[in-house]
Length: 471
Image 1 (spheres, rainbow, N blue to C red):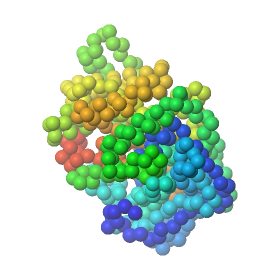
Image 2: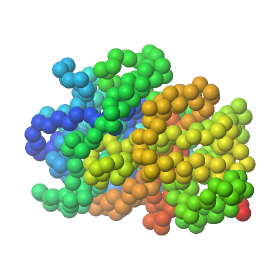
Image 3: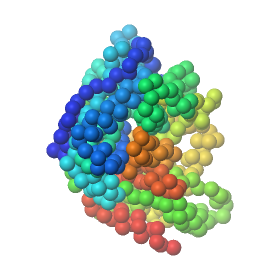
């Protein structure tokens, strides 16, 4: 377990296995290699309960039993998630291997933290969330696929924390697993079946490697990571997850919401200034997606707040991943369970993010990049991406990343006790990263989760809210 356990008390540490499954192994694809030693993706789902259901004796006896039973049945459909990432001596590449008897680590705990504080969007201590996500085991020779933690907040509710190995699952796949688990828990049947859209598709043959791109990328990445983590094992076959430490000192975590009306305001502002910044020869788009509007607005607020507190920090860039399932030929099934995302680096000039019209410039840059993906495909220019990233880092650029999506539908995940009161991407504290989700009120807005330095967060909140009331 990670530290921060003063917030919780461990009730039990157990394992859950599928009731019966045959040995299976999956090769890693070029989509997976990039994430082999990357930090786990960590999310927390918070659920409110009636006082009687969240009384410790009832909760651990009834609620947890139901969650564990349905988890076992879900793993029957997702056996690789009970397995490990290993690298057989006779194999050129690592694999995901499930062997009967393999299981998922499950921690049961109860928390002394105020449940209301955890649900609040207002800034709160970053490490309060850390105690609610489990550690994902890894060593030089093997790594767990997922680990889970169920934490009771007595008489209030509970949380489910999940850590997933990014070489095994992307965000869409891990959400598919949680949705499947929730559906089987809600059905409460001894041998339930999953609806077709929740059945995972594991066949790696659908992934076609574009001209050995994956291995070249993997080798370049290994070289890059060995520079970032010079004291870690740089053996090409090492599977230990690299220590991307959470940023806990002097930081706070908060959530900001952009309603549909807010997004419309941002869109009008961007389009009204478009001709001023680019002239009439640059055609103005008729549609700007909620993704473009949300990320551009959040990025500019982050950059300006950071620069406002740390004046020497002036150069920013944005990197995000795109789902390639529908962007490759032939298309890959939507329920493909693995990684099917590819990284994109948005090209911007020095100081673009903090210029007076930074919002228009950044929105156009992201919009243009997405349009290019649609016309030239997700791998266009990939051969230069890592070297470009390293060059930007050398020039003093701070690259802001992104996790999650406002299209995953996380707020519809109901285990039988109602929809989540809050969903949080905890791992945004491991780098400067924006966490995205659809807004919990179901009205088409977007939630932005952030971990920032205390002072930067204060200024960010001021800029974020002021900007929405500025014409």
